Image (cartoon, rainbow, N blue to C red; front, side, top):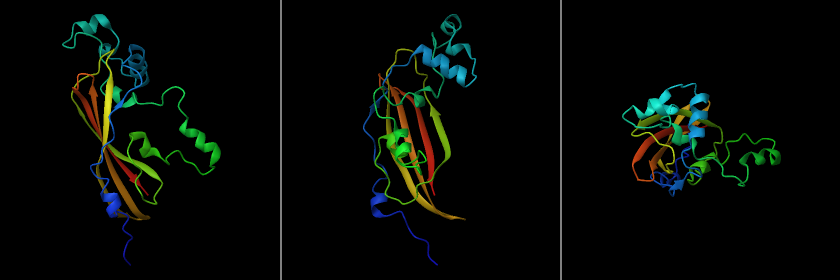
Length: 178
């Protein structure tokens, strides 16, 4: 019995597709840095103590390394994507999830979504007052057969930069649709 191939020409054509550059709705803010540092229980004084941070090679407070990945939230006044939950009792929050990357939806029937891992390449800390941008790109889309059926693997690369166009980090995430 042959397995159904969901990686069609239309799906393969998405490999390499890139989103428009997105600009975070807020600049890097000290209060947000503090909240992330507290939420992750990382009490490094580099993230909050001016006197300490000025004595380091960074010459001031910086944001935790993964901070830019959390800067692209829904702007005030934008529709809440979870409002769909009220319209569809089967809505699980994943439909349209790839839309968060400003990339086109992948035309496959699989809808259950799993995070299969992340690779991060870190270049530079974001600093208070800085504007952060991101460009997302489909790196790869492929199919494997699992015990319960076909699995579609989607690799999305997110490149974060500051307003000087300096790279902050590259975040490569593998998603699995089942």
